[in-house]
Length: 576
Image (cartoon, rainbow, N blue to C red):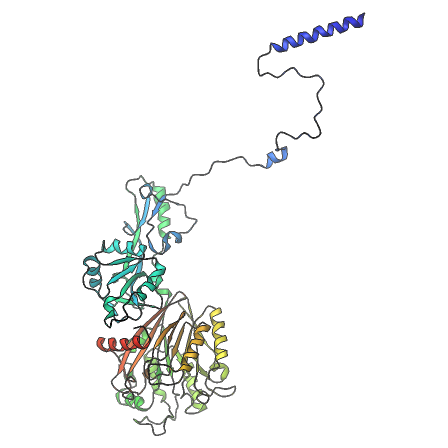
């Protein structure tokens, strides 16, 4: 009976509990179950985060807002100035000019630097110089000018407009990489007077390369050591300005002044330029020596001495040994083709600023071993390194390695004639007879070491503009090995040149000091080749032309004679 009553009581209690729970507000949990339900062993936690992962996961943070000054850089500025800014500077670049606190542009309140441009023409161009006034009037008025069209990149165009205004001249905009080929290929080769139809270019200094001829403005060229940047028409200033429409804090101004101090000042640093003057035959003997006795030992340098001294590295290929017992020179050699020079004639080599001596010449051994060793000692006393000849074969074939203004330049040379002219051996002094396999391997090794290699030859002497097939083979082979310049030191008259892959080959320059006046039609003419390097790169060559009116003295040509010689040279080289 008690059990029955107990059961009835429990039923009423459960019903009461249900009624009470039904009256609870919505959203509250139901009454707690007295006996918890065990979870299934397959059940997964509702969150992947455990106590350990919560501790290791960083809390999300807001992206910091840049705090540096807003800077707009004219996208047409040259030379990637934007990319040259150090990445750790506290500034923010913007593409919106009006939103910027500061501007970096051609026209500016505060100058930061000057970018140097070159007026450039295809290498086979007769014109050497124009006036800055001619250039300005051509640009502004389409006045008469040596070129018909000026070709340039968009960046260069913007620079020119900043200084000269909008052009009236014919200007063509091309990508920088296409300009050289366009100017070379758009000439009219069928017209003799093709120079008036040439397309020239305006290019940044860093874009100069050997196939361009840089035209000087007012006889002022950025390729030369005496370049006058302050008075150069194609020097374009750029700098920075404050946007007057915005309120710029003192802190922002100070931050930007740090930026301005890191802007590049120029694309042409005079401390990175090296000029090398290469010359042809020097033989201070016979009629040349006779005139030195009559007019003075230094007389042959009267016209070209200053130009030679201006070069950072002046090269001389002296074929003849000095000898203490050398007899007085005669107009006509008593013993045919056996030469020597008096010791005092070395003063002429000092006068022209000689820096490097080539010894590949045929006549270095004419006066015997003692004279050769005496000559080498004289060069050593002057501090002049020599190559292509020496006290033995090891020294004779060793290159010269020089470093100047961050330019690593090496000279190597040999005598390419049949054996007999070059006498250097394991035990004997003399010139180095060409071992072409050695020349190739040594040039490749020098190039791998970062040197710009100049290879010179004493080769077959041909009184003609055309080189021999043997010369072409040897010259091109060392160019293939990596020599950037290949030059012939043997020719007694000018010979042709070529751009061979990435090399400049000049097969013969003619005489520097030697008595060839009147021997053949062009033996009274010669080139001095002034090569220019910049920061480890070869920029090209400036051809200096000379003529002989006596037996000893090269004289700078008149403009008319120079034009005639260059015209013949360009035709012989296949460029006209």
